[in-house]
Length: 68
Image (cartoon, rainbow, N blue to C red; front, side):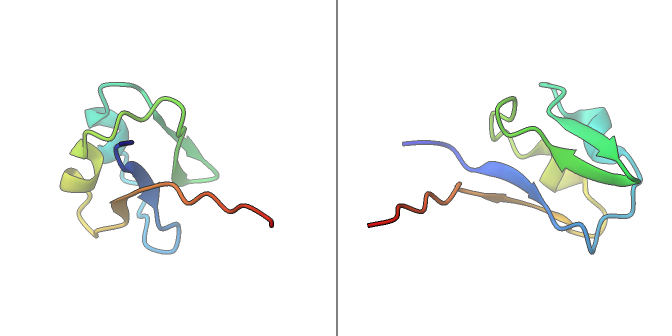
């Protein structure tokens, strides 16, 4: 079973950079003054979600949509 990955709510992100500083996999980048998660690097540890002062990051499983 796949671990959840970090997801950033761009409307809440303050661009403080705390999530970037704690990510052991360097999976979070700053782009256009907002944090973005590089999903292929994220291991789902949750440190970024724990440190976010405004709750802009949550851990969620990736949804797969299949057209039938």
